[in-house]
Amino acid sequence: MAEVAVRTFLLLLAALLPGLSHANEASDVRVKDIARIAGVRDNPLTGYGLVFGLSGSGDSTRNRATLQSISNTLRNFGVNVDLGDLSSRNVAAVLVTAKLPAFAEPGQQLDVQVASSGDARSLVGGTLMLVPLSGPDGQIYAIAQGAVSVGGYQFEAITASVQKNHPTVGWVPAGATVERSSPLGVVGDGQSLSILLNEPDFTLAQRMTQAIRDALPDAEATAEHAGKVTVKFDAQDPGLVARIARIENIRLARERRSRVVVNERTGTVVAGGGIRIGSVSITHGDLRVEVNTRYSVSQPDGFLVRPGSDVRSVLVPESRIDVQEGVAPVVSVAEGTTVAELVSALRTIKLTTRDVIAVLQSIKAAGALDGELLIQ
Image 1 (cartoon, one colour):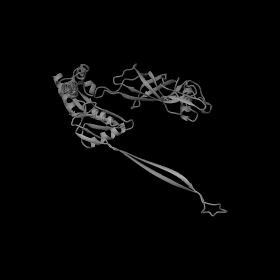
Image 2 (tube, one colour):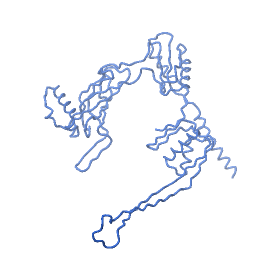
Image 3 (cartoon, one colour):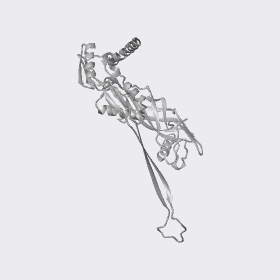
Image 4 (cartoon, rainbow, N blue to C red):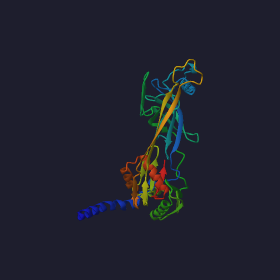
């Protein structure tokens, strides 16, 4: 019996050792996966327009801005209509947004998002009319038009309605065409550039600096701070794109942060498998207090003729308090236990997700959690 137990322990140890070694090992990533070149980013575009062709689910006549926009649109086609003559609910005023990527050139197509700005019930079946999209500088960079795709619906009757998702928000795939080149590009004079880390980290910035020096002997890399690495070349080279491509594909070791993310609204706990916990003992009590109140009517006895104002029926509350306190289970975890093992142990004593979150917060306050606890 003892030999079987020893053999089982050795097999379990052999199965756990590779996982433990892999948890402590730093993974290799490319520079482009954890950083970006300064100046290379998306630019927001916005616009205001109208969606036509709705089946009575558009804005009501209470939206004066929509009526004014319809009148102005028809006037561009040579049709003059007074605001009082407009009563159609087949049109909805919308805000149009898009993202202009870096290095975008005229003719490139973009996806646009359409959102109702009035009291329209649904944008299903509508068509977005021509809308200019402007950047933060006020310049027009794209124009949008096309059929609106809505991932939902809404149907109403006299006493019932059915709705799925948000029918007042939709997309126009490839609905915008770039008319002006993106104003942003690589920051620098061609002889230097900056690399910005997605998550600033001193260790990662130093490793990136050393990796760039090893891969590009003719470049001088310097870590400005935890989130920025500056690369300077010996001379201005017309092949800057090739140099950036080489830098983006440099691989370096990256150790993931020890972080436990807790979402109290949804009761979600996400933790890395390698996060360890110190030696602690956990006791979680279960105290229930139930208060029941019953009202009884107290009436005067006998038959009263013309009773005074002080003689009347009285409601008398009768409260009963029941206190139930269950036995508080104790869970002890050894030094080096992972968060996943702790959660499994807490589940065995039938703790809810909310209770698990409270226990994790207490462990962090006690200084026994080797990592960062992020509460959303």
